Image (tube, rainbow, N blue to C red; front, top):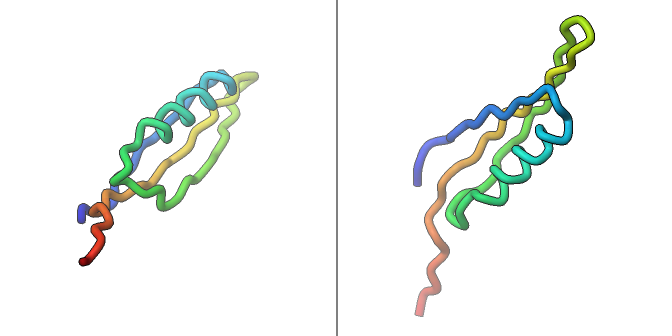
Length: 66
């Protein structure tokens, strides 16, 4: 097993943000487990930044015992 890993995903375009988040989660291997996702927005003037901090962990594959 490996320690926790983090990925910060952000965009000012909500559709691009959703696409990036979906792509990252879909690309996680079967030996990775999502632990937590924190979502946040930040406003600066008339611009909104959407961000997510994704925590995931690499685990060992399940092996059947004979």
